[in-house]
Amino acid sequence: MNKIVPPQTLTAADFASNQEIRWCPGCGDYSILKAAQQTLAEIGATPENTVFVSGIGCSSRFPYYVETYGYHTIHGRAPAFATGIKLANPELDVWIVTGDGDGLSIGGNHMAHLLRRNLNCQVLLLNNEIYGLTKGQYSPTSRSGTRSPSTPHGSVEQPVNPCSFALGAGGRFVARAYDVGQKELVGLLKRAHANLGTSFVEIYQNCIVFNDEAFVGFAGKKAPQDAVIWLTHGEPMLFGNGKKGLRLNRELLQFEVVDVADGDWKAAGVLVHDEANKTLAGLLVDMPVGTFPMALGVIYCDSMPTFDEAVVALNRKVSASKNRDLQTLLGSGETWSIGENEPAAKN
Image (cartoon, rainbow, N blue to C red; front, side):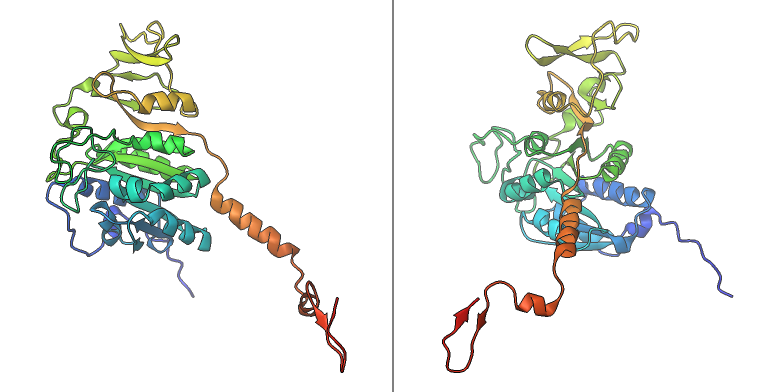
C-alpha cells in the first residue's frame, strides 16, 4: 500500500544555496536576498518552478544565492532572456534582478519593452545610485554633482527616476521600498508576485563602499519619522505618525504637506491613495525628497492582460487553423508540374 506523503513546507533557509556570498560586508543586497528568500517561502514557491534572471553588476550575482533555477546573463539583457524563458514555458515563475546601471543604462531599451509588453514576471531593480561592481563610476540614477572616477569634478547629468521611467514605459505595477525595511519589503514582494503582469519594484540599496549613506535621510536609523510615507490603497496619505498628510493643490496640480489635528485627516483635505490612478502615481514618484516624504509601497497598480498569455493564445489559434494534411500542404501555394518533353507549367 502506498503511503501518501504531504508536500514539504519550505522555509526561507530552503531557498538559500550553498554558494559563498560574494558581496561586501554591510552591503544592502544581503537584506534584499533574505527578503526574497522569505517571500519565496511564504508564497509557497517551489525551486523547480522558479527562475531568477540577472544581467551584470553586484545585484546580478543574485541567482547564485537562491536555490532555484537561475541565469546570470549579459549586461542589460535580463529582460530579453526572461521574455524567452517565459514564452518557452509560461508556467515558470520568473524573477528579474537588476541594478540601476544594468537595467536603466545599457538595458534601458529592453526594460522599456518589457514594461510595455507586460510580461508576467517580477522585476527587482536594486538602486544604489552608483556602479559598484566596476568601482564606483556614476550611474544613470546618480545625483547631479556626484563625484566619481568617471566624473571627478561632479556629474552634470540629471538622474533617471526609475519609477517615473516605469510609468512612462507603460508599467502596470510600480512600487518602491528600501533594503533595511525587511518586513515591508517582504510584504511588497508578495504583493508584486500576486500581480498579473510585469511588477516593477525599485529597492533603494546602500553601497557601503562607493556610495555609503546615500539614503540615510529616509532609510537610516536616525531618519525622522516624517521622512517617508508608506502608501496603502484606500487609506489616507498620512505620515509622521499620522500628524501630517498630503493634500492636492488643485490650482497648481501638485501636492502640499498639511498638518493633521486630532487625527481628523478629512478636515485637513488629505487625499486617499488610489493605486489605480496613474496621474496620482506620477505626482507621488516625482515628489522632491526633503520638501516631501519619500513615497514607498505600491504606488501604481492597474492590471491588464499579459504578453505571455496573449502570445500563447495566438499560437493556439494559429495552430488550430492550420491544415495538417501533408499532401494538401505540399500541393498548395507556388507549385509547378513538369511533364516529359514539356516546358514547366505554373499552376
